Amino acid sequence: MKRTTLSLFAGAAALAAVTGFAAVSAPGDTGAETAEPAARLPVERTSLLCPAPSASDLAETTYTSFTPVTEGAEKKGTATLTAAADGAGAEAGKGGEDAGSGKDGEDAKDGEEGKDGNDGKDGKPVLRPGAPGTPVTGTASGADAPALTGTAEGSHAPGWTVQQTTEVAAGTGRGLLGLNCTAPDTEFWFPGASTASGRTDYVHLTNPDDSAAVVDIELYGKDGVLKSTVGEGVTVPPGGGESLLLSTLTDVEQTDVTVHVNVRSGRLGAAVQALDDKTGGDWLTAAADPAGELVVPGIPADATAVRLMLFTPGGSDADLKVRLASPSGAITPAGHETVHVKAGMTTGVDLGEVTRGEAGSLVLTPTSGSVPVVAAVRVVRGKGGEQESAFIPASDPVGARATAAENRAKGTTLSVTAPDRTAKVEVTASAGTEGGTTATKTFTIEGGTTQNVEVPVPAGLKGTYALTVETVSGGPVYAARTLTGEDEDVASFTVQPLPDDRGTVSVPKAEQNLSVLQQPPA
Image (cartoon, rainbow, N blue to C red):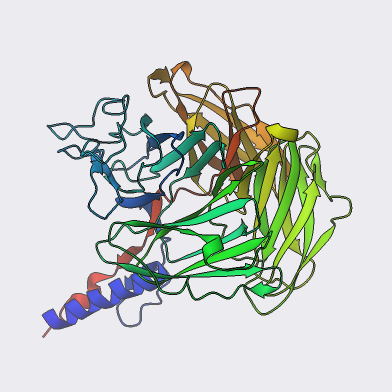
């Protein structure tokens, strides 16, 4: 009887893992009351990876850590950020104790260990995350700031976000470079890279694990694959980071290149740093997975040039409709109604000043027959010698919730897009890093439009704050945050899409009819 009971429970658990629900029924039971939808519970552990911020001695980097308050999350938690220079760097946020906790295990005081900042190489923390709901910042200077690997557990894990923002005053890649530190994965697509003269692009790889990772880096230009053996079997040491200059992987100069990072063993964080001699630089983060329909959210209203880059990894060509979701509705850019993407080849299209002074997002849909595509845009602001550039990859939707850390009282723009159906979103501004109280606003985004919403600002704000976007109804919605430099005479900026923060995970529920476990009467 014990063996029967155990195997019945095991079978139910296995079914739950596969289907999302399970039940054990007595013989003859119709099973009419067996299904219950899976519940969503806060994640208990998450990882983030930040690439080495800059090779410039003039670089000033700010890290901002933030975890939104999540209902049902554990009361206590920890978080660490570890320098990944040689796999044995100092732990940022630990400093001899678990980050996010004091000596008695309680959350650290807001802003503790974050005000002065350091590069994480001397055993001192870059920052110590505070209690969920309050952002904390740390800083690093110069060219030697390392890549960071991070882990959060308990109350710090659900929706944990780390923003890395670097200001470079002069030289190649000057301007504002920003990205949300990313979770480790095994495959990444970067349309929008380049090996052309005047561009210096690096692919940064960060390994969070205690074993080496092996990765292949493939490059695709306008005529197909750019042959190279240098990018095959690249080894990234345990807990370490590697940076590879794209122009050393191929002798071919190409304006538009798609980079495919495919991890053979292990897992990595990957990002491309794109530096331009004339228009500054920024981070190109991984595009959303190949899909037949794509949204590139949050193109700045004052963009003076927009270039769309696309690639289809399959064996079939793709034909896409190009629409701009503007504040007044969907618009078809004149002369760019459709775009043809040849299989295995990178396609670039100049859209010019497509937004014409209004908020906008690109919506790409198949003309017929869905073919998976990846996409990104390169955006330029300013004119003449004051031009600066940034990149926006196609993004996943906000989903339940998404967060942008490090926002300022001035220079923050939040763009929200509802490409299909009208949606309602709630936007919450956190407390400031040095003071202030939360503020919340609700917005309705009409279907087919993009709106630059009037973001709430914390009352009594001191320092910077986080913005959290939650989908209330309708949708799907997409969002992006633009951060501009503090010098109004310079067009420096960076844009980060806001995909779902994956702060919750689906956990199957099971119902069991225990009558099957009862022994029949003698």
